[in-house]
Image (cartoon, rainbow, N blue to C red; front, side, top):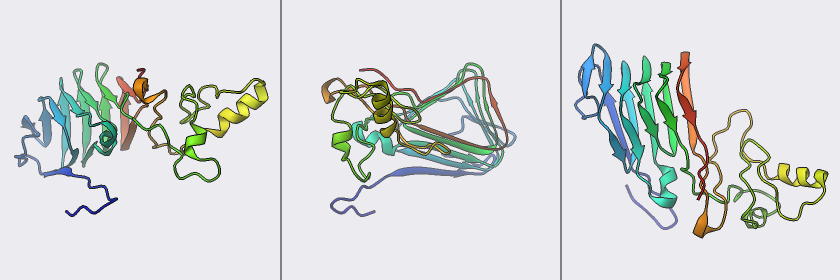
Length: 217
């Protein structure tokens, strides 16, 4: 891999496993065609796992190491041919989490979390018209991904306030996959939420938590 000026280089760990033949250390044991994971892990690079069969997380925490602005380039991306199951308080926490399989199950005490993983304060860098700096010149403006966010400074009339708040909305309302926005001055900034995408071709059993909330300073 070569890095040139003004280019970002993304390093990714990829594991491709067959049932009973995964020697990467990801699976703690195998039960038939199911890879059972019982060890905690912290990733400084993206974890991309392609598995033939199922994967089952039990009482573990997989999380991505915080690396300030580069944190958003790290992801947990798991693709299996059968099922993904988070059981017995299992937690996946990263800026981006993508799971794909025939079925996905999240038990009552388990969680997929991207809480407080976005350091981005300017989501409109490629927008026409007003510059991102103008749109977000007031640090008290709340995040607006999927909603109208907080109240911009200088709004006194209800209609004008709503109009200005709506103008700050970003992301695709039908297929949202944009990071939340950090808010406040850099010295005391609240962090935005990350991204979660689940692909279940047959069933999704959600008894636990999927969360992409922001986090206060």
